[in-house]
Length: 257
Ligand SMILES: Nc1ncnc2c1ncn2[C@@H]1O[C@H](COP(=O)(O)OP(=O)(O)OP(=O)(O)O)[C@@H](O)[C@H]1O
Image 1 (cartoon, helix red, strand yellow):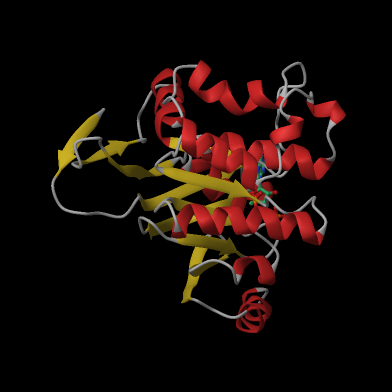
Image 2 (tube, rainbow, N blue to C red; image 1 turned 180 degrees about the vertical axis):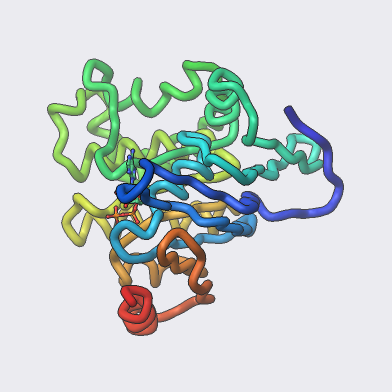
């Protein structure tokens, strides 16, 4: 399942990803031989027109879905300081689940919290299922920064949408996974809560050296990232380093074709 590497490498490597749905006239190609490297310790946004393959790509990179062809690998840092390459391609569903639990945090637009569990239980669920044990100090800092200290005993139905998303963000962050994937994490939030969530993703990168990959439609949200990958029709159109929201909006007009 793994091989050891000694040189620093991108956190996520995707080579020649292809995915097709349907056949004949109804065929769609969400991914067309897409290759991409996601650098370690960087905040990457993914933008593109509706239907360009953003969610499909994110799910394939995170091991929540598989491509028909191509390869995905993560490069993770072990406690010893050595890096290790973890191939996602070809793993059984069970092994993929173990890799996700160990190395990946995922924030869904629709939160995906377990309704019967309290906020605390939701946040600690990945470690309860066998993922890494969160560092106590980091856990408390994340909870405090997200303003969740008084909400930990509440169940999702007792929380606002913004609070539920903050619980989902905490769940993805606290175990310091190798990569945090976020699919439109601010899509359902008011602008103030959205800014808080983006601020925490930014802090995870700047203060804790984590790697974040976020799909968004919002040029202002993407402008918080270090780089933005623009998808068009299942391919990478361009990668922009530290673009302004204005540059992103202009590039998106071009990508709509
Ligand atoms: N399970 C599926 N079955 C059939 N087609 C699908 C499936 N999932 C995605 N697609 C199609 O694949 C294409 C890419 O979808 P995807 O959700 O990745 O795009 P997106 O860029 O995230 O779009 P949006 O911005 O609208 O969320 C679309 O044409 C979509 O209809």
